[in-house]
Image (cartoon, rainbow, N blue to C red; front, side, top):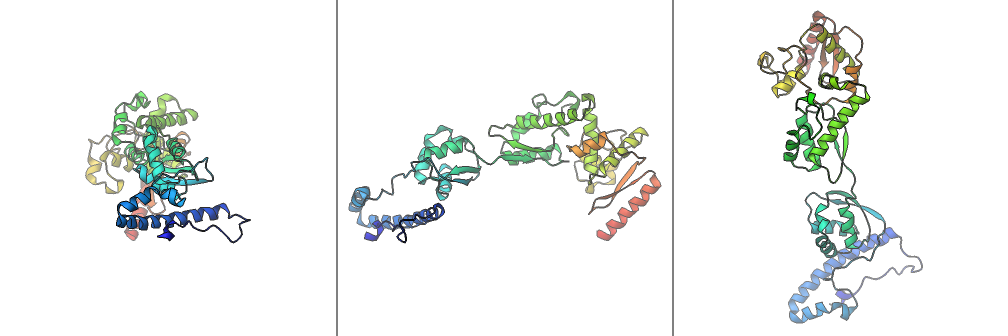
Length: 378
């Protein structure tokens, strides 16, 4: 029993030169592990001796000079070196305390949970990586977590995503309810959607990286995306009356062109077709209206006149954008490459190589090249 109450020996090799902080930190964690095992043994022993043992337990500090393991140890502060601590999604106060204790931030889990319960703002603590200090008072640790001193939570929207894909990613990354996004989408004025969008957000959620603030809302996030789109168009000198048309064309370019160099040529081919009153016959538009991938389109899909996005059956532009175009695609529409192309086809689906043609005969040769590639790589 005596060994249970013996404090770990101090460094006796050279007391004139204290250990470096990193060594002391590692030693402190080893001591915590050993002390934890000792407490388990002590608990078993006290259960065996019953009431007498309980009295000894309560008077442990006065009898041995050691602090009572049942008491909530706390650091006096103000704290030392910085350390990053990961707070998992849905973590309880106890789970947070354990993570902080393991990182050397708080002296005990119980001190942290007590401070956590005493702070009404503790419910605001967000999951993520928090930058803390070693050896902090538990109340200070809770206060710092409440301030959300976390690594910035960011939402990245790739070019060419549809509104449904963007909302799904925003829900996943932000943790905000899908119902909140749906409610915001049903109120176009709240998110700043212009009248020309006709209440449809498709194409207006600008692809970019957004920093999510602690008080972010679904409506606020969607509004920021819409405002970013407006800002880009204004910076490029696009008349507000042309916003919808530019976004619609740019969305077609975005979904049809894989390489940046091809996009201004696709934009030119689209303009040439529109100038000659030719149907655009763009698979990406047809697929969007059919609600399926372009690789799954059928002859019946092409013959379906009820699909307003079926550019094989309807002349002119589709009713609106089919995705959110990026800056490269917008620039391609505003500055298309000079040329007489009216046809384009991707002849290598692995590399995205695209060939352009001015007439149908040359286009058919390019299509045959695609068929040969498909046969060789099917």
